[in-house]
Length: 90
Image (cartoon, rainbow, N blue to C red; front, side, top):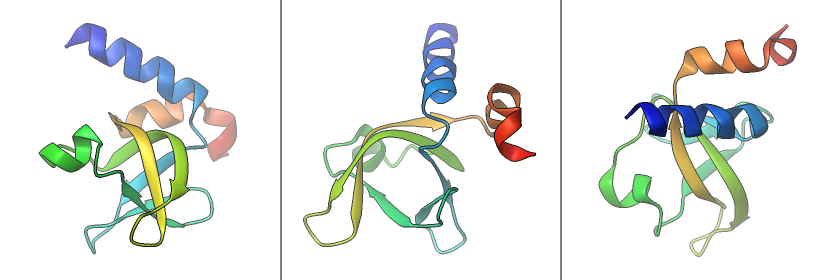
C-alpha cells in the first residue's frame, strides 16, 4: 500500500493537469475545463468500480460510445493536489 501511494503521488505530481473529480451525477469531470470524461472499459477503475472522488489519468481518446475516454487511471488523494501543485490552485 505504501509503495502504491508513493507511485500515485509521483504520477499526480507530473500529471496534475489531468485530474478529474467525481460529481454528484456519478460522472467524472476534469478540473481544468470541466469536460466530462469516462474511464476506459479496459481500466481497472471501470472494471472494479474502485474509484475515489479524484482520479488522475495519463491519456485521453475518443470514446467508443462518443465523449472523451480516459486511460491509465488511478485514484488520487485530494490533499495531494494542493501539496504537489500549490501554484495551480492559487
